[in-house]
Length: 160
Image (cartoon, rainbow, N blue to C red; front, side, top):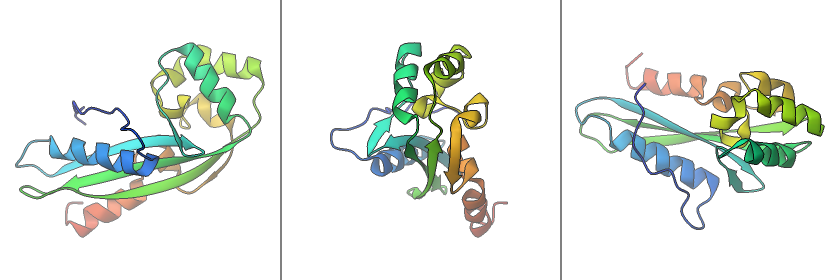
């Protein structure tokens, strides 16, 4: 895995899916020109609003309060680029519902530090998994890379 230096700011009026595809595609474009590149970007959206990574613990608490007892969507765009070609992409969406969380539970979770580098201020693969009531769709998508769909792509490209 190689981090990319792509501008991840949301453009005015950009919805969550369009944003995720744009960022993943840009990540695929900036990789070495002679290589096969697989890039991804995961976005959490609540009522169409993109919930990014919190800047600090206060913002993490605010985000988790908003998610408490509600359903949101996790969109991951995966972009693939063959040498000498433009990237192609696909998006996987998973619906996640949080339990109703009490303030002390939110504070304790934020104190772990886990939410500070996660879109939507939680990591389902860590302590944040205990915040969820239900998940409809791909679990690995919520973690950050929809494995089943990505493996299908790699099989179709003869790369697995």
